[in-house]
Length: 241
Ligand code: C5P
Image 1 (spheres, rainbow, N blue to C red):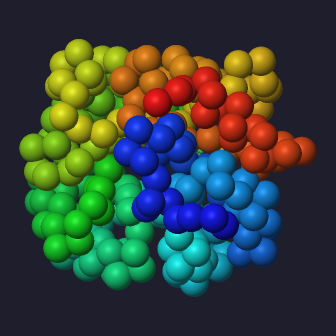
Image 2 (cartoon, protein in one colour):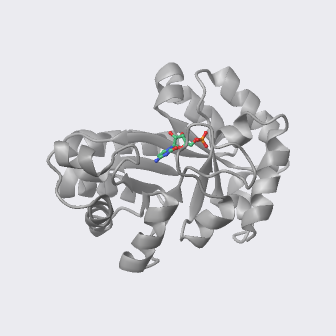
């Protein structure tokens, strides 16, 4: 490593790229991080890797100068979520997720717990993209998916969250309705010309950014590439600064 992620120039496109470490061991994660090298600095640790390996994976990434997006989607009573956010802050993560449907008090507890840590972003998940209109109706949520996304995002931002996780399609609606003073993290991104794998609706990196995404999350196209660093660089060249 020649330098650390927190030393990047503000206009560097690497700020916008998050690599998802969806693997089940610290060794597999380290292999990917080493292969990506200086081509990306932010890594998403989700429930698979965290459940398998625990907080040391996060500590090791942070100690090596990488930024960590801890994607555990907290959803519990306000006191418990606030306490979990405080622990995540101690690990040194830069971004973490909560479920917006946890409601005002839970979101406020999360945002308040993060306040003491400069640059720690609390991001809210609105409606999981695996849920459609009929799924929402079945669990008692009225209105379209789109309206529900905007309503939940409004609640999250109103309670101090710094942004949301949203598909590219939702991102443009959110920008149109709620403006540009919050972050949008967009998964389901595939470099132009690559396989969609099990993602149903995919967008290219450039399309995601044009839709209003602040950050894109890319997993397998990078982690399963023969040359992960080259793949990351190809994606960066598509999003520019
Ligand atoms: O490998 P791939 O690029 O599909 O990985 C995308 C990452 O983003 C995974 O960690 C997945 O859990 C996450 N994600 C997603 N779609 C959503 C929300 C999160 O693919 N709607």
